[in-house]
Structures are given as C-alpha cells and as structure tokens.
Amino acid sequence: MHNYHGLLLAHNDHIANTTGHRPSFFIRTYGCQMNSRDSEKLAALLTQLGYQEAQSLETSDLALFNTCCVRESAENRIFGHLSRLRHTKETQKPDMLIAVGGCMSQQAEISEKIAAAHPYINVVFGTANRHRLPQFLWQAIQSGKQVIDISEDENLPELDSVPVTTRDYAHKAGVNIMYGCDNYCSYCIVPYVRGRERSRPAADILREIEALAADGVKEIMLLGQNVNSYGKRLANDSLDSGVILDFPTLLRHVNQVPGLERIRFMTSHPKDFSNDLVAAVRDLDKVCKSVHLPLQSGSTRVLEDMNRQYTQDDYLALAARLQQAGIGLSTDIIVGYPGETEDDFIATLEVARKVRFLGAFTFIYSKRSGTPAAKRTDLVPRKVSSERFERLTATIYPILLEINQAKVGSTVHTMVEETSGTAIKGRTDDNTLVHFDAEQGAYKLGQIVPVRITSAKSFYVCGEIV
Ligand code: SAH
Ligand code: SF4
Ligand code: F3S
Image (cartoon, rainbow, N blue to C red; front, side, top):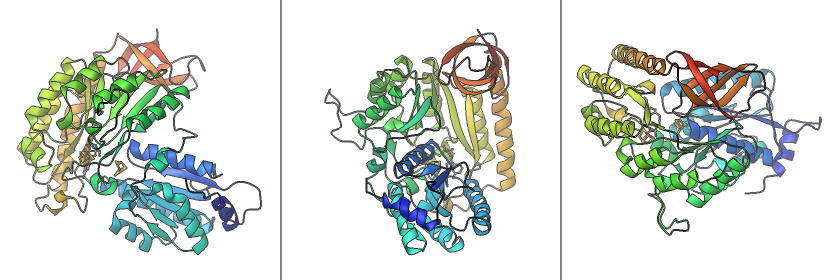
C-alpha cells in the first residue's frame, strides 16, 4: 500500500485542526453488497491512515459517497443527498472534503457532469481505482482544486489486502469472489462501470474467510455479479489438488472453514447453474438451502431481447430441479422492458405463479445510457409499466403470505441478526425474517436458536423461543 500517512497531517492543516482530534470520515453507501464490502474496505484503509469514524456525514471532515447507478432513481437520490450536504458545507463546514466514488462516478459523462455542476465536491473517483483514494485526497488538499480520476487500474488486490477493521455486522460479512461482469444484459450498466469479469484466487478468498470466521463471523455471503461462472478467468489457480477451480469446488472448500455456520452467495445467473452446483448446494451442510435466481422476465421473447441466454422453459426446469433438491428461490424481475407486450407480461406472471418465490425484488425498467436497450424507441409508457408493476406485486405478495402461513406451527432454526431491547429479528436458512421476543441480552448476534412460528405476514413471521 502506498504510504499516504502524510495525508492526515495535511488534512489536519486543511481543517485548521488544533484540538488534537483526528480528522473524521463518514461513508454513505448506495447499491448492492459489492458496494457495502468496498465501503468496509475503504473505511479500513482510512482508519489505517489515522482517520476516525464520524457519527454522520454532516459532522465529518471527509464525507464519502459510494454510489450506485443501476437505476435512474438511485442516481436521483444521490444527487438529492449531495445537494443537501452542499448546504451544510457552505453554511457550517467550509473545510469539509467531499469525495464521490463508485459506480455512478465511473460513467465518464456523469463524472464530468458532477464535476461541472457540483464544484463543492473535492474528489470524484471510480470503481477500479478506489484504493487510490488517499492519493486523490492528498492531491485535492495540496492543489485546492477538484480532482477527477476514474482511470481503470486492474490492481484491485491492493484494496482486498486491507484487513477490515470494523464491519457493518459482527456476525456476518460479504466476501468478493469475483469482480465485474461479462454478461451484457441489454438493460444493465454494471459491465460498463465494473469492468470485465475477474475471479479472485481461491487461496486469497479462503484466507479472508478463515480470518473472518476466526474473528467470530458465522455467516458468509460470497459476492459476485455471476458467482456461477467463478473460475472462468482464472487459469492455473489451484489448491492442493491441482484442479482448476469452479464455483461448486470453491463452495466445498468454504464449507470446511471451521466456525462458519452459514454460507450464502449472490448472484446466480440461470444460464450457468450446473447440476454439480445444485448438488453442492443440496449436500453441503453449511450452504443455505435458498438461492437468489434472477428471472428478469418470464417471456422467452423478452429474455432474448435482454440477452439473458435462457428461455422460460429453461428457467422453469432449473427452478423445478432446485426445488426438488429442497432449495427455495428468490428473484429479481423487471417490468416494462422496451417492447414488452401484455402477453409478455402475462408470461412473467405465469412464471411467478408456478415457481412461488420466497422473495422477489421487482423493478420498473430504467433506461441507462450507454446500454444497448437505451437505443430502443419502443418504450412502454410509464402508466402501463406502473400498472404492470402493481399487478406483479399483487400476484407475488399473496403467495409470500401463503408460504409463510404454511410455516405456522413449525420450529425453525433462526440466526439472531438484530436485537433491540427484548425484540429480536433473525433469519432462517431459507432467509425468512423471524420476529420474536427474549429476555434482554439472552442471545448474541450470530447465535442460532429454535423458534416456533405462531403467526405470519407477507414479509416476515412471528414466533416464540422453544
Ligand atoms: N448481477 C446481478 C444483478 C445486478 S443488478 C444479476 O445478474 O442478477 C440487480 C438487479 O437490478 C437486476 O437483477 C435487475 O433486475 C435490476 N436492474 C438492472 N438494471 C436495470 C435497469 N436498467 N432497469 C431496471 N432494473 C434493472
Ligand atoms: Fe447486469 Fe446481467 Fe451482469 Fe447481472 S448478469 S450484472 S444483470 S449484465
Ligand atoms: Fe449499483 Fe454498482 Fe452494485 S451499479 S447495484 S452498486 S455493482
């Protein structure tokens, strides 16, 4: 790691700090688990350099935005938050440094737009050079000018090797197993802002997981845009066996890490879900029996337009194989993709009824400039897509309720995830959210307890300790 220990002194001077307090930072994270994990690593990097964590963006000396651009709504929200912080900076904290990184800034035209329209922002950096943040801050302080650098630097392991000092949760953590995406689904901006698919060496991944488990982590989420293709871009990576690793093999190794209770992974692309992977999920004791398998659309014609590389039949067959193996499914669905007809939409409803998802994230198509779909002119009117969105959730939510009602009376192993006084929230192996009460302090985070389910709602169940 480059030595930027002078940064702290420079920052102290910049804020004319004579109190002896170390300059503070606060990170606001948007988007997916990859961004959350990146933020933890950036926090560790800043802590290593001597910064302390502030209580809020408004009170920090360094306000850091780790952004998402997967849908327009995410970007609008970020610009709203930035404008509010501008007010704080201009009226109360003129020396505050504001840095904006992540997927939104990685888009060249957006980074220029941010720079031009938001002169109070000091640093704009990207996804592939995030480990160089200290250098950019240093430059911004020294020059007094805005620093914009979204150059791509493939040397990401530099940030991977930073040991995380504080995690968002004590009992669970995400671990990147790969970066980027090569699938180019026609609506999606991720391949353009996260670069080509690269797998991390298995030995590094296992070392990181072993360290987390030794530190008390009970649940690991293996992260990648398409974890099923793990290993494709990783020639000559072998553990003792000398074989090239694929995802099921990696899972088998992770399953052996002592101290772990649960292994999850996100996200799986249906086109790459092999029989070997179905068997690994079914047979490995620590791997949770639920899989997130984005459908996107139930219409084969729309799937083809989306470049998803599977048909409705392929998806249904895979879903049946997984469910027969005792594995539940959750999903992502987009409505209102350009050219989506009423029949296409009905095909999506049909798949939702047949599969009976345990959970679903539903989205209205959002045009992302630079993607192939952005060129389409046959847009679905907003009114129609909103109406389809309502119909989709009206189909899915009652099924969720039925699924949860069927659990009433059964006893489930619940991992304690959140406690507030006597109220506890936990999750089962299949990711059902469970609310229950217990004496204050009776259970600690990450502990697995038997809970008998007494009542059900669409998005959670309530129960009592057995
Ligand atoms: N790599 C993951 C998902 C990444 S983005 C995967 O392939 O499943 C998370 C979800 O956002 C996607 O599954 C998709 O449903 C949704 N999404 C992505 N781009 C979108 C867009 N332009 N409009 C609406 N939803 C989108
Ligand atoms: Fe986007 Fe498709 Fe890659 Fe997922 S698989 S990140 S939806 S391009
Ligand atoms: Fe958003 Fe980037 Fe994740 S666009 S969803 S933060 S990969």
